[in-house]
Length: 402
Ligand code: EZ4
Ligand code: CO
View (cartoon, rainbow, N blue to C red):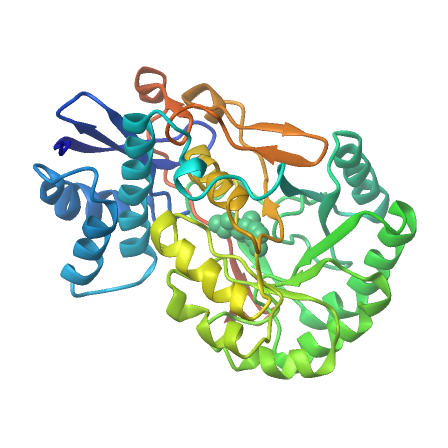
């Protein structure tokens, strides 16, 4: 029996931060939820869906997920890119949610069932000075985390991404904050910080660090070598993602494990890194890479080369993406770890995810579908607010990779 898509709509809300949500309803009254949030470009993806995708969905068979995915991807002609792939990804998530609900099973069962007991997860910890960073890490370890990403301030700087600064600038009133960056100061400072963190936490805690695409290959190679005594679980995003060959040079110089991929949208963006075995972890977000359907292909491709998957899971993708990621993670043999930044309190009054955290592991919901409720009435109290990621510049004003 086909189940026909009767309506498809887009909801933009800002409970603590902006989220773009897709609601698909079938003729049987089954509701599927998808997430289409692209941080700082939310309204572009909302328009892509509202103006160009939702009208095409009406009347289609909701059960034919792969056919609809192929239809949207190939039929759009203008393929790939973050906006297109997030939009298609949101539809894919909503259709998997519907299929699970129609069959009465959690999505991970449709993906082959659990290959492990839970999903190993890492938290974020940051502090401008080392003592604050150590306190932040201790807090995460006390909460049960077995893996932590550590980021610190840099002497002489006023702001560093993802780290609260003692000298925050003026409010930017909806414009991007500007961060002045000095790579040499970073390269001098961060190995000592991470060595102190390692002696503080001991051998067994998995430590991660994110360089946010800011280094040249030779700078990254030096950092990787300098960090070898720290035995990181991974060093993330050392060079900009566009040039897949750049990481070959880094790889040849260091045994520090490398991770990249949060800005990638398709398997094509990561094929070179994977087949060249330049990296250890590929980090696409399940929604930004076009949903569960194409993410399975990235995961399987990576497994051929002993590359693990470690999905992006920041607070700027909604709990719907986090839930989808957990369903796929638990059914994926070559899972490495799942990022889990957590959510603003207001976000959890609108999105009500049923996944659970216990002793460092996340567990997907056993409810039919993805297991996230979305409260449309609560969402109305949080209208869209313009907001941007920071931009980074050198001291002389030259914009640089973020
Ligand atoms: O900066 O999701 O590994 N996680 C990260 C994130 C990204 C944001 C960008 O929107 O680097 O926190
Ligand atoms: Co990152």
